[in-house]
View 1 (cartoon, helix red, strand yellow):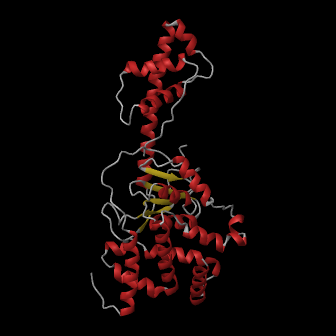
View 2 (cartoon, rainbow, N blue to C red):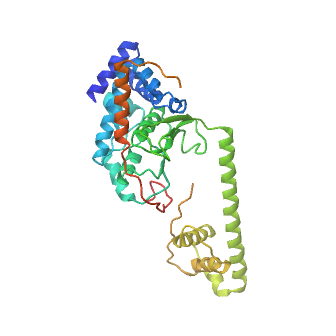
View 3 (cartoon, rainbow, N blue to C red):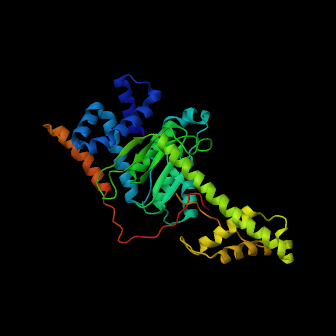
Length: 355
C-alpha cells in the first residue's frame, strides 16, 4: 500500500488537495472511471483517455487495483483493497476509532462464511457492510458465483463507496446503499447499482451507476409491506378463530390450548416452518393446516423451523493513449475469464447471517 499512498500524496500535492481527503478523492475518481454512462454512450475508449489525462497518479492506482484483485482471485482469494488502504491511512492515526469504525478482521469474515456454507442464495445482504469484507468472503466461499445479488448497506459515505468498488472489481452483481439500516430501512439517500454492464451476457468491463431512492420506490415498498401485513394478520386470525371454536367443544384440547408459553404467533411460525420443510411452493389443505395448529398446542417439545423471508465519434489517439486503453482493457479481460455455468441451479433464499 506504500506505493498507492505515495501516488495519492503526489496527486494531492499536484492538485493542492488536502491530504486528509486523499482517499475520498481516489474513491470519487474511481467511481467516475467505472461510471456506466460512457459504456451506454459508446465512448469507453475516449473516457479512459480522459480519465488518464485527468490524473496520471490516480489512473496508475486503478491499474494497481485491478492487478492486485486479479492476482488474489486467481488464487481463489478475495482482497479488500480499500479497507486495507483505509486502515493504513487512518486507523493508525486514530480517525477510525474516533468515529467508532472497526472493520471486521478477514479471518472472522471467513469464519462466518464457512459457517453459512456454500448454499446458493439469490440475495445476500450485509446490513452494516463497511468496506464489504463479509460479502467478499462469502463470494470467495462460493467461487465468486455470478448468480447471487449482493446488497450492502451502511451509514458512512466512505464505506459505501469502498464497498461498491470492492464488490464491482470482484465481479459481483448487486447494489450498495447509504442509509440508517435500523432507523430507516425502507428508504436510502443514494447508492450504486453494480456491474449492470457485465450481465446477463459476460463482458470484460465493470460498471457503477449512481441511484437514488424515489417517491415511487417508497410507495412501492410501503404497499408491499402493507399487503404482507394484511396477509399475515388474516392467517393469524383464521388460525385463532378455528382454535377458539375447537376449544369450546373439545375439553381435552381446551386444556392444551390454555398451556403457558404457547401463542398464536408461534403457532403460525410452526405451521410455516413445517410447510417450508416440504419445499419452496407448497399446497396444503385446511385440514392439514389446522392439524398442525392443534399439534403445536398438544405437544410440549415442539421445534420451530426458521422461516426465511423471500425478496460515436472517434478521435485520433496517440501511441501513449492507445497503450493506456489497451492496458486497462487487457487487465479487465483477464478477470472476465470465468467459466460459464453449464446448468441452472435451484437456490435457497436467505440472509448472510442465517446461522
